[in-house]
Amino acid sequence: MYLQINELLGNAQVVQAVIIRAKERGLDEIYWMKHFGFKQTMSRTFKTYFGTQMGVTAGSIIDKNANKPLRDRSGLGSGVLEVIQFGDRYQIDNNRLDELQALINIFNNAKVEDQGKVMTDIIDYLVDDFRQCILAPHKAMDIIVDSLRSKGAISESDITQGVGLEAFSLPANLISPATSDKANFLTYLRGKMEELKVKYGKYALMEMSRSTFNKNIIGCSEFGTTYKSILGSKEEFTLTSGLITQEMASQVLQGVGLPAIRINEDLVQMSDGSFKQIFADNRISLFQKDRQGDMRWYQTYEPTDPVPTKVYTRQDGGMYIATQRTDEGRFTEYMAEWVPEFKSPNNITIFNLDTMNA
View (cartoon, rainbow, N blue to C red):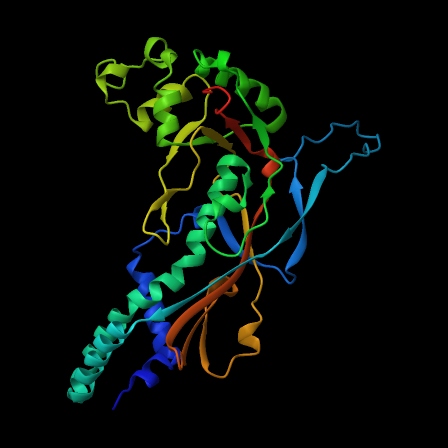
């Protein structure tokens, strides 16, 4: 078998093999998938319903000869969502192509029984060229999802690349503690949890950044003076020990009626090489469960009416990856159309601590 670059990068099966290998490496975790799963939408713009209740209300007890009482169905709030279009194009530079050609030369000069191993080396080499295409829309969605989960809103400033993103927000329950609540913040949280329980039910966890945890939970004066615990045979711990972990704090606070603590330290690398913390500081978000909705996807148009010079491979969620040779060089590109649909955003409670720490 004799191989050329055009046959290699113009072969959809080879490109798909590269994509599969890149996914198998698992070099970058996709964070939004912890909370959402793909679900198709047949329209780019669609109506969505926000459930106001997570559980089923208790039924009525009636006399054996009585008629059943007429009950109202739990109310639903409505809104309109439109899928967000993600897309980028990347050029494979000449140095990479020279190195790829060197591998192809080894393949062409190898014995037939040895070509399989060289092809594996070629696929492994191409992984780095396709990895950005595969992950770019997922990383952008990581930023969007955690901005919504931590602030209840997303603005154009949260996404620093692209042509723009219209701001949108969730109908979440937003609470802003006052500066007077800072000294006894944990008591304040306990009181709020009792109030929220009547309207929203039980929360399973409260999520925050590491900075927020250090500053407002274990850094709260109450934690060191009031909320102490004996952990098995270990000695009583204090703030000065410097050994208080997320698990220790959760054990203490769950014992007094607060949800379990989860610290979110997820980072996304930006195009300039810097890293962006995607869960906002000075926010504590309360969730009733980890699965918070569906990632609605729309089938992109281009692969159904393909450009003749492009080779397409379809991915999960209606996304496609394409390769192309033009007179300007060789390119890889992707496109995806997604939007997160929160199923019960009005049951999410977010504490904005900016006002308390002002």
